[in-house]
Image: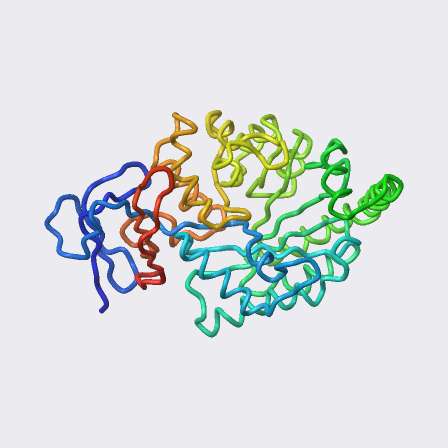
Length: 378
């Protein structure tokens, strides 16, 4: 029997902060005590929060493709990503892997296989600090997304899929101004080339998106996969998500869509960098505004792993109706529930001992220790 305690801690429970200690036995939280009687590792009054649960990060992909035209060894990229994730207090992570090839990416079939296989291999070989799962980001307006989905969706490490449409005139790009501003510079298009690119992408959406959505949903339901909608902009988008059995609404772009998602029981997920920056990077709704309106459920680090912990302590300052325990729930309990992981996500007796020691310093908190199932990983 392996046992240890974290003592002299400010413990963030689901609904309150208490001063006391947490006893861990065989990787599980065994006791939570108030007061100073327990002997254990003295955390010097630091906060102890549940290990963070990350549902949507592009960070693995960024390590795998560190520069345009460059791909890294997938296993090495994963281990580099894993070290940063664990160091940021994230103990459960859904690594987003984009599926579906288009003119911008080229054929990504081999890349998808390399990333999925790297996670499976590293997990089986006990190489990883955090508990890694795969989130398949399905670009519906592509010719091979359903083929990619069929090839990987039944892998046990795949736990979530999101249905996306990043074509011009849809969802995130309802108006073309931002789409043109982003892609024309990135792709170095002339005005005529940009116009043709838009027309081609819209034609691909008309040709592929609806059939791919139906095929992916059918296969995913057969295996019991959790699904997320993405960039809902209108009530009609939300109605479609509800009809199709989504459990998560990633990055709704308007207040109306976020309110409708929340009212329908979808977990509304927004980016922690949005909280830190005080605004969306592409001009959409502010996450803090959704929190103030009571319709924000989950935060995701998205593209900066440490943003998740940073935003947790910052959000109660940006939205005065949000307490620290409520903010912590958004990065632990609620994402765990949305992903059907009911063994973790809060500091409670019987839950996994995924724990993070955090010192609250101004303006940026410091992660001083991370345990996954009672094992020190950072």
